[in-house]
Amino acid sequence: MSSSENNLAIVAAAERASIFKPIEDRLLALQNNKRLGLSFEKNTISNKNDSVTINTGALKISVRAFVSKHPNTGAVINPLPISVAIWKEQDFQLNEGCETPQEKAFNTRDFSSYDDALSYVFKEIERSS
Image (cartoon, rainbow, N blue to C red):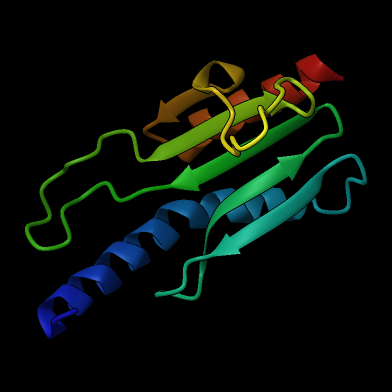
């Protein structure tokens, strides 16, 4: 990776972490909730969290931040940089030799704001209880 590519990767990783930070803060406030298992994932470039998997028992929920702006030009390239995927713990069966479930097993939505993404996540958690 060239120096300029490395710099762009650093900018992109920092943006992902920045987009994810308010999500992380809200979820950490709920960390004492024994019903929710939180597993944060660090970006290897920024060494900051940019995604989380939430285990509610019945549901698994993945919340991921992606880049919104081109790291070089600053132009918006992704107006919906927060992705939420929800699936039931035993909602799909994997065939031998196939490690990836079919997409229909997942309910995936993208959001422009962390408030909208978390509202959706909390609504789905409440519905599954």
